[in-house]
Image 1 (cartoon, rainbow, N blue to C red):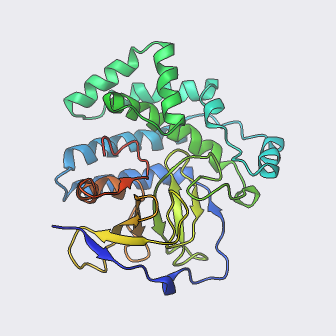
Image 2: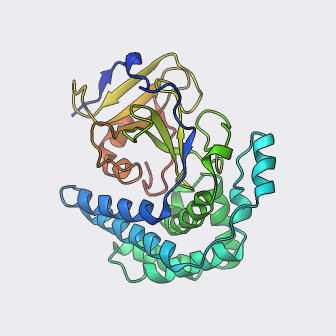
Image 3: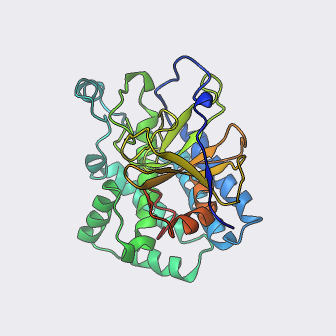
Length: 306
């Protein structure tokens, strides 16, 4: 296998006059559908043990969304202040200091004990469970900054998963119409980095590109053929695992301006694609891109070490 340069197709940039800025996470479906996709991908992948483990974690996320009491929504005045200042209304650092988040983390760690997991993941969970408040606060700060230390990736994964539950529940309480663009590659809800981007087939936004937040699950509109790291529209190219595969549904969008890359998934060609699960399952593309001059700009706490 080798990476294959694929030229952008500007004629395919969106099929409607104006796409919605954002789609808020539907928490009743988000983690349930993600878990199902992880499990389906595990059936035919060399990453089966890890994908099965992640399917278990996301099932817990789905269960907790249903089991937890209703969350206090972000106050309307906070949303309007953020809107006026062109800032995200969800403060990730503040949200993880709440009692609701601490309860979510506690319950998630308890339920994570029961799922089948690799030995290293079991050891990491045990370490998180006995971590003191200062250590947990440090981990939460790293997750809020989208900056995970290599030596603690396995431990951070559990805290990140609990953070996703809490952030998605808060994000789901927002009206997408009250959000404003922040800057290229920044979630308008919480300021998070994109996992990757996806060309979607949703009714009302067919053929447009949306980036997916690694923290709160918001999908926000980004112009196609534009770098999500620096905003450049020049020197954009595409790479795929299979040589000459113009029809690949997972590609690396590379930028010759800042020498970064972010995955782009074509859900309009394969409706079963899920932005988190298929990012992990397409690890082969990450491995091939590691040998290039480009640095990955997308952030996925489940894609450990790549």
